[in-house]
Amino acid sequence: MHLSRRNLLGSAAVAAVPAAPRHDDPATVRPRPGGPAAVSGRSGPGERATAPGGSRRGEPVRTGFERLAADGYALLEGRRVGVVTNPTGITRDADHIVDVLHADPRVALTAVFGPEHGFRGTAQAGGSEGRHDDPATGLPVYDTYLRSGRALADVFTASGVDTVVFDIQDVGARFYTYVWTLYDCMEAAQLAGLRLVVLDRPNPVTGREALGPVLHREFATFVGRQPVAQAHGMTVAELARLFNGEFLATPVGLETVRMSGWRREAFYDDCGLPWVPPSPNMPTPDTALVYSGTCMFEGTNLSEGRGTTRPFELLGAEGVDGRWAAAVNGLGLPGVRFREAYFTPTFSKFQGRTVGGVQIHVTDRAAYDPVRTGIALLVTARQVWDGFAWRSDDWIDKLTGSARVRTMIDAGAGTDEVTGAWQDELAAFRRTRRKYLLYK
Image 1: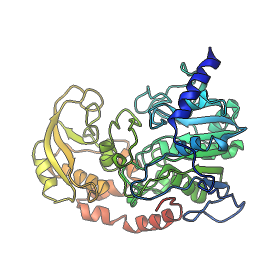
Image 2: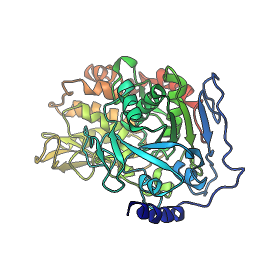
Image 3: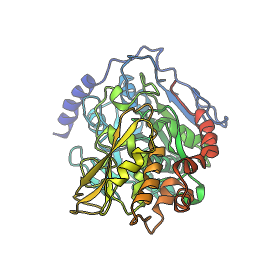
Image 4: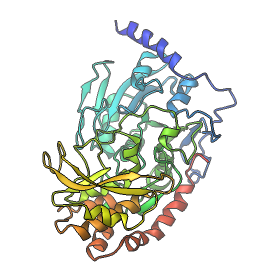
């Protein structure tokens, strides 16, 4: 029964992937042991970059998994494979890559590793699915959430894999925990003596530029382990190269399978790929567009829209009225307007209570700056609502990467002052970031 299921799904999987590229297409770059940090278009220490991404307008976007499959999974041949993924790890036909790989006799898939929210996505924020066997495949599923260093390396070792594959859709924000799951997996794979393969996917809010404050190391947590800008403007494969070249004490044996057809200025709906919510409160690419700014409201006593159909686009609290929308509209922020809004969250802050606030309407995605907009919303909320308060655990400091945003707003600083304070560190991050970009 088990074998016949593999054979049946294996036939479907072959039909689901594009035709194999020409033999001169993948252009493998071999690692240079002990070499310098990676530069644009080249590999860093211990890294081999496979299937370079194209940038021709009109070319379909093929994810790293599609490129891997089109090459007959040659990169995984003879390996005992474990996959770090969640519901976003799908083909363009919406089949999960774990189901596809498990069904294919060319791949020895022996384990799955689930991040926050779990492999199949059944857990809410701050939760995971724990150790279990996947009902669909029978594969053992190991929980990576809140595990790092030697503890995570021990999980990898116990699973018996020799190659860890990472394939999760990111949303472009430093405090979205999947990028730090990637970092932790890289560190743990190095400690366990394993190889790590990153299958790339688009940054849904473009990869044009990095925005916002850069994390200060003394504020490192699972919502930011290393000095990265709040909106990093990178893909997960590019971040893996950055982590390997700048932050890991000993680089892991890293291979990145790039996309083809992706352009840095492309938003997710330009890519022709199905969207799967990466987490329960990230329902659409529109959510991702505002998230790197409005997630800062998690650090306040206002609702960030959890428990509504528009999380992170709706913000509010009891006692807030139309003055807030008027105040922030009065700033003339580019590419965005704000509507006075009232809503009743079904869970999280203000559960079952009607609150007032704003709904964000992005009118020009190219002009919109989510982090600057988030700061403007914080500044004006504090000005118009006398109930405004930060969370008592200084969560805002962990989200923004330092105490600066909180202390400046408390001191009465305006949007320009606050955003101006991080420009030097942002410029330095942008220079470092440039060395690790894979796409034009």
